[in-house]
Image (cartoon, rainbow, N blue to C red):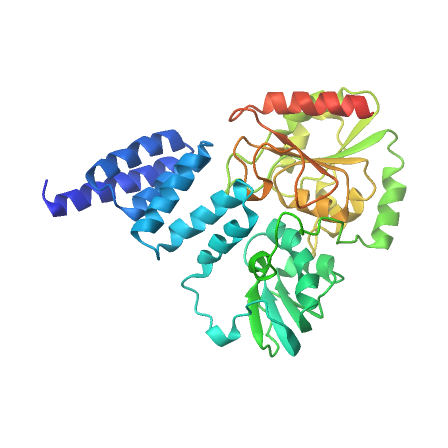
Length: 381
């Protein structure tokens, strides 16, 4: 083959591998990437993609090797660095993981003099901006108070729908809805860069509750939910399937829980997915979907409801982070290879002290997860 035809063949195979991975066929993607590497063994982009496919199948050592090889070939390959960071975090390598995770900002147009590097900023203003989903914001907002300890004022840009929920979070002097005019600031930092900037380790992550529900709403929902006698379990079964198709169950998967005497199921599902409630009347689940997040302030009602429950059971979605941040007893159901923040194998998490993780033992096997949850819930009740 000529050099040009080699490039074309590798490009085509790499694109095919990416497509297979996006279609949740990572093992097939691995095979295609290996074909591409037979033609060009030192192609960093193919190696980085191969690492991602290895990670998706749980082959983490192979994933790390692929990412590191890509970086050895091209030390400035931002995607390989970022992928390496995610994999290291999944493996529990917090410090190196967050260092590599910073490469997501490699090409960002931020003046160097404005970048906060973790230094004291007494008498100055630090602007922190959220950057990803609701769950990410709720998870990492706890670190703002640690940044505040190093300086003067802290302004935080958050998604508008989280403004009311987070307005009382420790360390925030000014809360700015996304899209609103910015105040004067001396330094800037993305919210999910705080772990690196604050030198976070597995031993110093603050895991105690750090968000409070509104007392008036708690009281309102206490009156309503107290009418429902029994052990009250809030359930959420679907995350954003546009982001991750594997991050959801069907509501009917929770049927064994409803058979436990005195267990009363209460829906914490808002929006997409809540239509399933009508299909399973035998669960006798309390449907609150019309009352969740009806206005501009997301999660306010959810938080108040959670504070009146005995247990929250949820897939990996923002509800999990909200429940954990409130200090609620929370069980999270995870796919075999979860998002990096949940690491692998452990039943507990560094991030929330009242949370237990229930993992798939093999991909797509939710039945065994629900079986273990049902057995443990029956013992508690």
